[in-house]
Structures are given as structure tokens and as C-alpha cells.
Length: 112
Image (tube, rainbow, N blue to C red; front, side, top):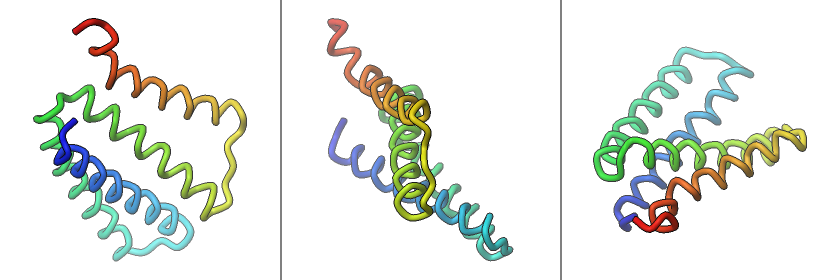
């Protein structure tokens, strides 16, 4: 992954994480302005994803992005909102992270 690709991934993850956090706030206190901001954030994040898909392929770009968001949003849910994951759910997050590791490094491990 190039430095620019990593930066784009980081920016899109930050945007999606902000949008996800705003969804939680919207669920607590709905509002039209908040909903519009959430939609704008998701649209912006997806525009960045278009570039990542072109540069890295669909499977790699979406796998990395999805797990980065999974980890970031779970941390926010636990640390900020006091939510907890059951042990089996924690194992699921760890398996997802391991899966992305295989997607990213699989070609190098498989001799490609």
C-alpha cells in the first residue's frame, strides 16, 4: 500500500467513523440537520472509496475499510458510549482483523 493510499484510507475511515458516531447521537436525539450531515459524510467517504477501489481493487479496499471502521467504531462505542461486547463478539472482531491481515498479506504468503 502506498503512502497516499494509506492516507486516503485513514481519511475515509475517519469520515465513516465520524458519520457512525453521529448516527448514535442521531438515535439519541433525531434531527433533520444531523441526518443531512450524516448523509453528506457517508457520501464523502464513499467518494474516497471510489479511488481506493481503483487503486487497490474492490476486495482489498472494502475489506480494509470495513475492518478499520469496525475496530474504530467499537472503540468509540465502548469508550465514549459505555457499550460492551460479549466475549464471542470480541472474538468476532479479532477474527475480522485476522481476516483482513490474510487479505492484505495473502499474496505474499502464497508465493505471488
